[in-house]
Length: 163
Image (cartoon, rainbow, N blue to C red; front, side, top):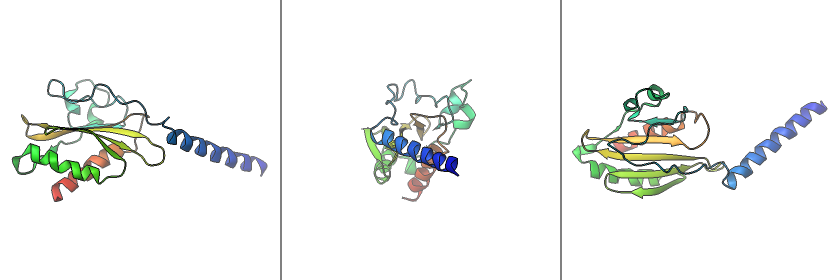
């Protein structure tokens, strides 16, 4: 009985320490310095299964090439700039969102979880040559995101289609 009590105290202690680490910013990771569009591509997906990219298939030999692939966002009414502009209020309505860079053809936002302060970096780029909005969403830390980045983009796709 005593060992069960000590295990319970240990679990609670670890949870409190993890929460405190998040609150002081120890779980937010460092912002990537290589985001943006280069040679018609966003940064490749992460090497670990915690990201999605509509351009994942362009990176031959990448470890997460197939798993990270997600469809790009459709451009509404053939107007990429207008679709990009419509993304902003949809993103701002989400909790924990900070718009870091906003241009007519590129948008970089940061999602931060409420309690643990984990950060995901999300990019949108209007690819005029393909007529779509390319997207990349990746967690800064960890190996798995439990599908959060994929769900986020799919939810945004649905909101964009119905707004």
